[in-house]
Image (cartoon, rainbow, N blue to C red):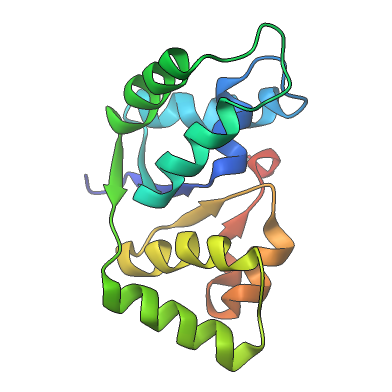
Length: 151
C-alpha cells in the first residue's frame, strides 16, 4: 500500500459517519468512504469496536439502532475495511504509566488507548472530533491529530 495514507478513525468520527442524523455526518462520512474505497488505509482499535457498539445502541435517534443493526454496521463498515489493532497487557500498562506521569485521569484514558494504537501502527493521521484531548494525551503525536473537517 505504498502511497496510501494510513488513518486511524476514532469513535466520534465513526458514529458520525454511520448515523445520517448526526450533526457531523457530512464531515465524517467522506473519511469512512475513502477507507472503504481503498483510497486510505483505515485503522481502528479493538476497543473502539466495543465503544462503537455501546454508543450506537444507546444513541437517542428515531428509530433506535437495534443491537443487530449496530453489529451489522460495525461488521460491514469497519471490520471489513479497517485494520483492527489489539493492545496487549503490556500496552495497557505502558498507557497507564504514560497517563500517570502526565497526571491525566478519567475518561481521557479511553482516548489514550486509541492514541497508543496510532503510535504502534505509525499512522499518518488520527481523525477525531476530540482534537484537544488527543493532543494533550500524546503531545508527540499532536501534528498527526486532525479534525474530519480538515479535508
